[in-house]
Length: 136
Image 1: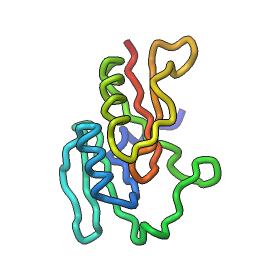
Image 2: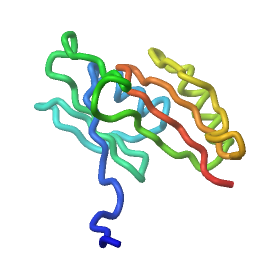
Image 3: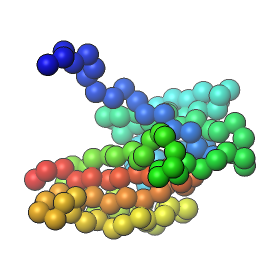
Image 4: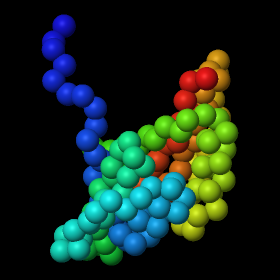
């Protein structure tokens, strides 16, 4: 076995068409805090206390090609975990009420025999996110 040289994710960087809409989604729907930014880039850094997400605005959002998970190489989706099923239901309600969010599917078991549920959606700007409950 090869020695592990990494110890988890430091941050995730997402290119978004509308920086303000993405920031508002992460802070209002998911409860993240703004922990920094670079106005000259422009970028905003948001965190839930466990992971930091860097939101970078696309240089030319009007002409940026949207990601197609079946045709392009790149981030298929961002998966975030919640503490339990009650939190999953709460975040589902907040996410589906947020403007410009598209729900792909409501909470369902991750596998037919699993007690762990998840749901998928596209945040404002189209990036796919999975919210996943924790094991009981």
